Image (cartoon, rainbow, N blue to C red; front, side, top):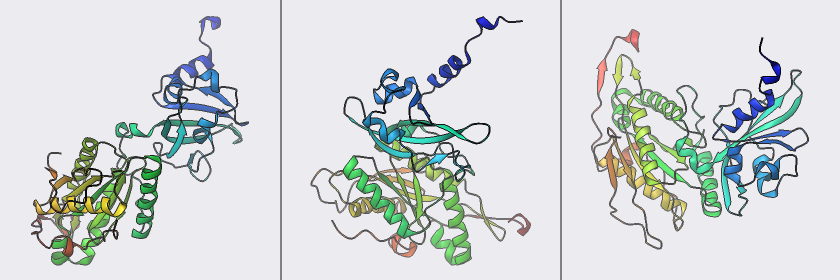
Length: 349
C-alpha cells in the first residue's frame, strides 16, 4: 500500500495542471478575491501571483475579472461553445493597453450553490492560433443586414478608438446567378442557406457572419496581418468547395469569389467596404474561385481607381456605405462560371 505521506498534495497537483495551461487562468472566490493566478496569467498581464492572490484586484485587471456578459455554466448558457469569449480591454502592469479575449465559468458545489468562478483569457492577437469551429458547432450568423451593419459600425469604432484589429471578407457565390435562372429562386435560396451554415461552421471565436445582398456574405474578423487574412480567406473558399448541395437530383458544385481587406487608421468604414468589394469583384472577373487581398493604402492617399490586387486562385489556398450588390449588378462585366451538376436519382437528393 503506498505511503500517503509520500503522495503529492491534491491541491498542488491541481495547481500544477492549471499552471501548465498556455491560457491565463484565475480562480475567484464568492467574495471576489483571487484564489489562484497561473503562470500564463502572470506572463500575459505582468502581475505576479503575490500581487493578485488574496489582495484587492488591481484596477488594471478589473475588466478581465469583472462579471462579463458572456458566462459559461450559468442556467441560461449551459450549452455555450467552449471557445467563445468576449473582447476585454485591460491594462498591462507596465501601463500598456492589453486587449484580451476572456470567458468566465461559474463554479458550483454539489448542491448547485455558486462557490466562485474561473476566468480564462488570452491576448486577442493570439486568435490566429485558435482552433476553428468544428462542423455542427459553428457560430450563429447575424440575422439581418441592419444588424450586420450595426456590428460593423461598433467594431469599426473599437478599431478607431481602441486599436482593436478589424478585417472584412466580402464573399459571393459564383454559381448563384446561373442557378437562379436554371433552377429557380427556391433552389438558389436553399443553396445560399447551405453555404451560410457551412461558412458559420468554419468561423473562430469573435468572428461574425451575415448575408449582404442577394448572393453575398460578409465576415467580420480581427486578423491584423495580411498573410493571416489571406490564409483565412483561402480556408473559407475551401470550405465552400466542400459544400454538398443537391436539388431535385442535381448535385451542384459550388465555389466563391472572396475579397479581403484590412482596416487602416486613416480610412472610413465606407472606404473599407469599398476596398473589400473591389477585391471581391476582382476575384469574380478573374473567373471566380479566387481570393483577392485588397492593397494597403498609404495615409492620406485617395482610394485608387485601378488598384493592384494580390490575387490567388482559391484552389491554392468619407461617402455613403457601399450598397450590397445583387448578383446581376456585381457581375455586369463578367461571365458567371458554368454550373457544374451531376445527375443523381431523386431519392438521393
